[in-house]
Image (cartoon, rainbow, N blue to C red; front, top):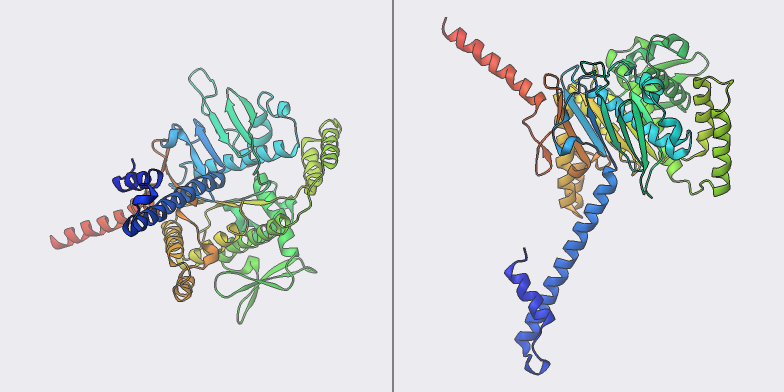
Length: 471
């Protein structure tokens, strides 16, 4: 509702007194009214722009019910989980964090394949296509919840920037959306089992592991071969080196040099994650700067080649996938979707902070990038809150360079994330639900499952003191 002052301003501007009756005070009042109206107009335009910009950044969301630990699904926003610039999933083991992250990875890949023309819409919509061709990649094919009569109860809905994908009654339903700002993504799923990478050199050694871990090893091998001399890791003042002749990755400190498999478990977890994230984010940044793109004729020729691969009965599904992947490198990818399980794995809290700042910096390099994390660590959550708070302070500082320098020492500007670009969700393994973490002026609430567990430790200690006082 408009304020009384604004009503008066509008009346003065649109129904001014006759010029003959204007004195100096009237003119001054009219000019003041015009200035006030200009400010109001500018404010409205800025807020409209912010709204449109944020909608563009959110881009996608997902709804999941009756699959693995997820039963009722998200209890907020009509069941939707927003996939923002940064999305964090917290909760107990077995609560469904990784299940949701893997489904996001799966549906984003399907959307990319549809947009690129890897397969036809009709091919995707064939009965049981999701179960047979896509869920086994993350070993999710046995997660369906059944009704008493054995009917599949699972329901998925993914609203992407280019496609609206629904899964119901064992079938995908695909609807193309009107879009003009779809960023073709490089999707990387970083599994918690990444420590094994330090001990393995080839895919043959990963026979018992998931396809996602095999793909991660492939990207790690590519990244380490591109190390020129050394690359600095964000913790312990150590560098990563690669001996191509012996095919050995080394960790070099101030006064030591060890092979990665002889280093600490924290470095074995961090080094592959950091190196792959660094390599892919910089590759996407380079590709997104290229101005050339496929012409219409090239696109038609590309889809004809895809069709020949798909219809070639002599090729296995895996051979087709590899052939399509190789052919699809002609498309410039302009977004890096980095999905990381437990970034805190085997790391001291201070090292978690340093790693998080690096992952956020990589994520901020390109507009379409997204970072999705699953965690058990209260430090990751609290450090993300610090980054969001720092972004708010940064926006208020404006041109004060002295204050900017002070802020940079706390949180680098390259790692900042605005409150509206972050989403945090809590998982309840007992109820099978997901809920959106509340915030206060954009800052994540301290009343969350991770902090509550820490508080429970204090309560237990108080009870022990009470017993001790009774002695």
